[in-house]
Image (cartoon, rainbow, N blue to C red; front, side, top):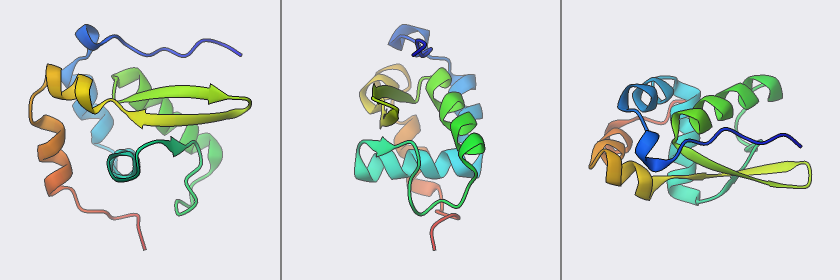
Length: 105
């Protein structure tokens, strides 16, 4: 299995983070991790093609919003809350506080 690109805390870029959070699906994935902790690569309540979901996870990971760990063929994502808070104090909390949840039923 190939190595996943996951930036170090010092390399997190605010523009990349905000871009990653600008998509409703990615914002919902972040909200899900913020409330549930570790999330599998295919959350049950999202009706999105697996390939599209994989692309969203990649964007979140490469922007530095998530840590990804592999277990066999499955991948599990965790929100990098501490790293984000250290680099950009209050940004994630502010976005999560005012973001609606458009994808949940």
